[in-house]
Amino acid sequence: MKGNAFFRLIRVFLKLDFPTTQTTQAERDAIVKYLTDASTAIEIGVYEAVNTILIAKNIQKKGIIYGIDPFFKGRLGICYYKYIAILGIMRNKIGNKITLIEKLSLDAVNDVPKKVDFIFIDGLHSYEGLKCD
Image (cartoon, rainbow, N blue to C red; front, side, top):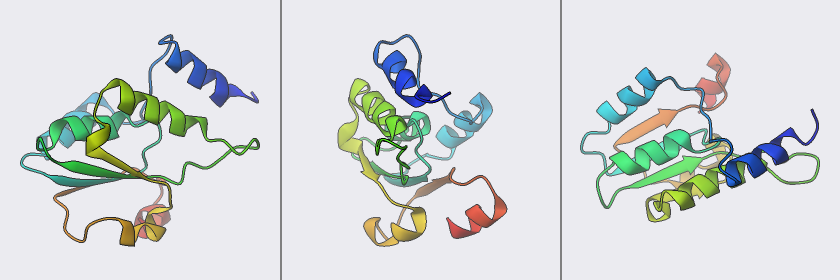
């Protein structure tokens, strides 16, 4: 359905719907478990920022997460999922812990620190994509 992403953004904005993720609760629990003592994190594949927000809330108090996603634009030149992500970050009041990098992961290598404590790869969902990430 054309325009579906736009209406999804409106529904999330009005709190008639919530941001989604493909990760299960068990996977999200594992993310939290392995964040112990992490102060710098990278997530490849932000989508609607469910896991980005989870990571930001569970890293050290002064920690930072770099969320990498190209946020591909639709035919109107807008990525509505990016705005769902930003809305969630604002609503959770954790923008100071998140840096969004609007690039493909292979193009963002110089935009993130060389030393990180945690990386969550949730990008292309294929073997070849994972190799690129």
